[in-house]
Amino acid sequence: MDMALKKDIYEDLALVWQGTLNREFTAECVVPDAMPDVGSIVDAEGVLTLRSKDTEAGSVLLAASISAFVLYMPDSGGVMQSLPVTMPVELSMEAPAADTDCRTVARLRIRTLDARMTNSRKISIRADVAAEAQSYQKRRLEIAVALEDEASSAHVLTQTAAMTAVSDVREKTFVVTDEYQLPAARGSSILSQRAEAVVEDVKYVSGKAVFRGRVRVNLILAGAEDEKIVSGRYETEFSQIMEVSGEGEIVPEIMIMLTGVYFDLPDQGEENGRITAEIHLAAQCVCRQTREISYMADLYSNRTMLTGQAEPLELITGTRNVSVRQTVTGSAEPSGAGGEVLGLFARVGSIAVEGDVVKAAVGIRLICRQQDGTYSLSRCRLAAEFPADLPEGTELACVTVTVTDVYYAPSGAGMDVRVSLQMEALALSRQTIFCVSQVTEDAAAWETMPLTASVTLARVGPETDMWALARRYHSTVDAIEKANEGRERGLLLIPKCR
Image (cartoon, rainbow, N blue to C red):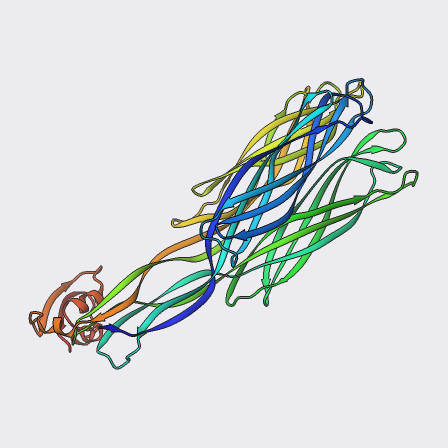
């Protein structure tokens, strides 16, 4: 006969699927008739913006676009040209456990972006895009803590454990605006642009996730009159508040994506003009809360036969933010004597987690203007490691590596570069507990059990589980403590109880 159980009910969001995908996208563009033939490719840069994110039965669909700019030197010489190209990015990720009721968060980034000349009128562009996504679904977790019949003869072992679960998944869109001073005296045209948003601090305050960060912008521009090419680096800080649900100790995680990047330049001839920037962003928030739960770990009776069926339950028992800064250095290939650096860019490529160490590859590009008026590109590839020093039983999740700053210094015919990086992650601690989920009573089987002594003398060591000892000899922990005047080790009397 099955016995009724008293259960505590917990409602949260369970991670039902997570996945990563790296994919290359290519596009070919024809040089317009109004532009000169391509002599050599200088560089390719671009901005990835998220357009949509949909979860269907068995799949997660991500749509984005890359606004790329290809810089090239004309075959006939002269001024460097810029060819804008829009690359659609569509990713379908198999997610067997996901459906339309899931709340999905996603992050996409460009790992590499290159262009090559097919012929003097055609250019091929290749982008390596990394995507990661997680889908969460509402969960109702029922955990038995006792028998419904409080007058039963059962002795129940109730234990506690810490449980960290996702309490909320939210999304908020917002716009950051600013004005940037033109690096040239008069109005210019944008030849290439790059923008990225990073979150620098996240807090939970009274039902709200409060986060701040900054948008970094790199522009390469052509002067309106003398056609001199210049570059500008800009930063705009932002802070936002997002309403979230949960209780107890809440740890919010923010993932941010660009959804639109727009720049307006002043009219030509306007002196001391400023660039108007409008950056659209989407912040995705995953909130985790930690609470203490109780569960029935074991039970027995000294009057009847009770059998408890225990099921394993894997818990995340705690989370903490891990932040590690690192600086890596290297040398770019020679870019030609007397070269003037027009732009220095760093992009994080592959990221791998090996135990408690995160490894990342960083690609460096320097665009230099030579004395003869031509432009060249120098590259180097650096490797970075971030030791997290995790305790045993802890793993890293939600890992990101961002570039915080880049520096250069001339060295012989080349350039020494230094890149500052920051790794952010969540450290998760896991534990498996065994919860009694079903209890069966068999009174007839109890009647056939052999008789046991009314008192047993047993030697108890320091590692002996007193609950297991009482269960074995049909006693109770309280009865053993009373019979031995509080002694818990050595030669103990074990009285039989009913």
